[in-house]
Image (cartoon, rainbow, N blue to C red; front, side, top):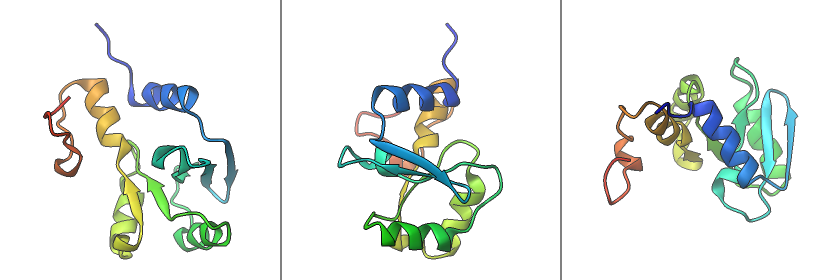
Length: 120
């Protein structure tokens, strides 16, 4: 059995439980989750290069949105940048760890992401 790739899992979750509205601006994909949960409200990278974190935080504040970032497979630079600028003020959703674990069946979830029933 071939397991789906992390990208395919992102597509599936975005299709089955989408944000109310998304837009791409200044290298970010900005979601309006309309109270539907953290994943549908989280900001993600819309380009390979790391965009301006201060800009997105100012934009989210102006919109009255939580500073919530989704870190997906390949977003290690964003993860490191957020950690370097006091990520304790931000909420970070490590979606990539779960998607990568499911897609290749070999990598354990990050310790903070382990569900009480163990690895998937």
